[in-house]
Length: 177
Image (tube, rainbow, N blue to C red):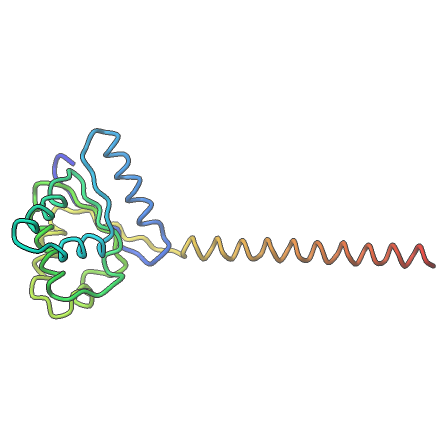
């Protein structure tokens, strides 16, 4: 935090990037730092909705001022050039002053897909990764794993009920015989 180091969590969906980010935000908050957690789409929509230079500057300050800003889910949607410019303004305002956490499912070479035709993408990435820790997370989605485990438990319960019904029917047959 004192060195304004950024963290970029890079990985597929369901690997815990957002949860890790929320834990870091919580820890920073407990340590007395001013923090903000926001989805990329919410922040960019908020900034683009501002009419006039004064209101946009005030809104930009809301994202530039925290000691630690976490921008979640960058890369899940595509944005036009205006949104790229707005994200650049946020990153530039924080550059070398405050730490930023980004969660993304796209490697930097694919950020042109997030912001097609945006001229500032290379500079945005350059500023973001300067003084950053890039944490690549590999593995299987924990949501998929939990869903498969839950389905298996339901199937086991269903097999257990079927076995009990069969045993009950066998017991009744034995009594009748």
